[in-house]
Amino acid sequence: MLKHHKFILLLALALFVLSSTAFNAFSLQAAASTKSAGTYSVNATSLNVRQAANASSRGLGTLKHGTKVSVSKWSGNWAYMASGKLKGYVSGTYLTKVSSSSTAQASSTSSTTTLGQKEVNAASLYMRKGPGTNYSTIGVLTKGTKVTVYSIKNNWAYILSGKTKGYVSAKYLSVIQSSSSSNNGGSASVPPTAPKPAPTPSKPSSGVRIVTAAYLNVRSGPDAGTKAVGVLKAGNAVTVQSTTGSWAYIVFGSLKGYVSVNYLSASGQRIICIDPGHGGKDDGASGNGLLEKDINLSIGLKVRTLLENAGIKVVMTRTDDTFIPLQTRVDIGEQAHADAYVSIHTNSGDGDTSANGIETFYNTTGSVQRGNDSIKMAGFIQQRMVQEMGSEDRGTKFGDLHVLRENSLPAILVEVGFITNKKEATQKLASDKYRNLAAQAIYLGILDYYNYKGQ
Image (cartoon, rainbow, N blue to C red; front, side):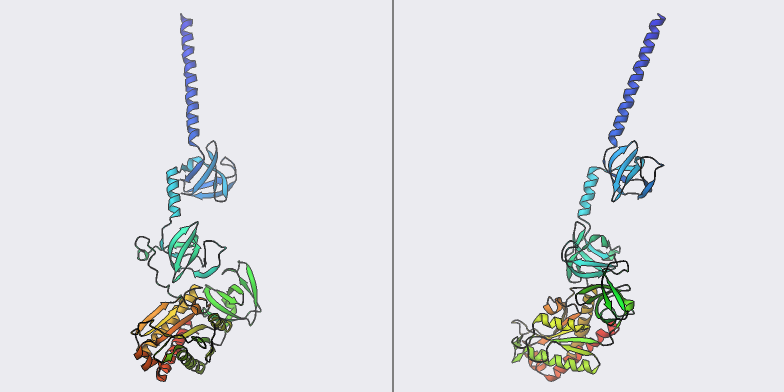
């Protein structure tokens, strides 16, 4: 009987051991099933990445709290993961599995990054014609420039800066923290106001400058560590389009890039290009017995006299009744390394004979500095014209005009009055007194611009 009880006791013990082993195996299998490959988030303040699956192996790097990692396999409680270029083992204790729904939501959020106003956080940021570095550059934005973002795709943002639209790398844009910069729901339909010009540096920020070093490297970026793309020699006259800190973005023939402003000096000669619109076979507008080309030339020659008397060199696109193609006019100013370009025109009402007053156009294509300078110069000349003439102030406006759009110089186009308005044409535009006043106003506006530039 005793033997029988022993047998039953041993049998029960064996069954208990077997069931316990099976339970533990099932538990381990279930635990292992939770350690699957996929996306995880770091839940520690910092997490060491190691070469092997143990705490004594060499450290390869550190991950911060919230970093998303991609786990491809497990070795016990150690996960082999990748975070960017960093790969290695981390303790699974400090990882939290990211659900597929969260991943999808995060993906959706990243593809529809908040739109609206943002600002540039890089020293300089190229604006391009398309979403990629293979597209040509249409301008350079400086740090702190505020832009309106229309869309972001594949880390390229389609933006508006001033009146210029193009693409920039989205990683160099930051959300503006101030509540005043909100655009009420992210709508980008209202263009931002033109960014205020940066304070005038000790060295003038644009115009013609002379190289003072025996040899001066031209670099691909505003930093001594960037690639050299060319070399300038002492005495070379370069056109400065913008400045970033102590670096100037220059143009010298076909060579473009950044140089240290410490090796540039003012040319010692102020140069203005005056462009009397139309000429020759191109009469321009006409009305009330007048031709636009004649008015433009008359005022342009008077402006030249005033500027030259002030010691400013003047380059004219035409000095007589000659037809000059639009691009040739631009080339004349650029090849002379002029500080700025002023085009003089007379307006037409296109059937509206009551239209009257003065307006001045600018274009912000190119560098932000060039755009800002053009806006400033337009404002100076417009203000002087209205004061001198007592005419209707039609304001300054963006103009998609060839001599402005295709020009690397700060450039404006002033419309001195309406040839189709009988009163304005006969009492002002036909009068030599009025033309003298118009020339004086343009001259004073140019001096205002030079004062603004510190030249």
